[in-house]
Image (cartoon, rainbow, N blue to C red; front, side, top):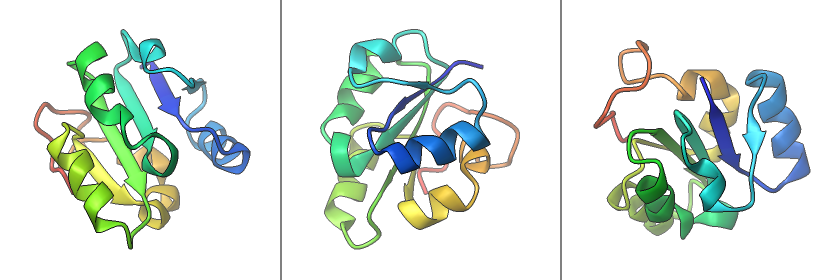
Length: 113
């Protein structure tokens, strides 16, 4: 599975690389083309959710952000993210966030949690 992460923070990148071997880090939404899963750090790429959905319409799109920034979390849901998580919950188990609502893999529509 090709996973592309729009994540700039070096500590977050190292945590993702440990949890998701082979993850590709990108600074441009165009790099998401052809990805099966896209991870978006809303703290730095909140505006990228809709664009990532446009270039990777069939990808499982997971976004994470600050639990206190409810407006950004909700905007990510509205822009097409399949799963939206507070950053603490996302980093508790990044690999689990890559699965669909029943743990059976990405599903179109997702649980939008």
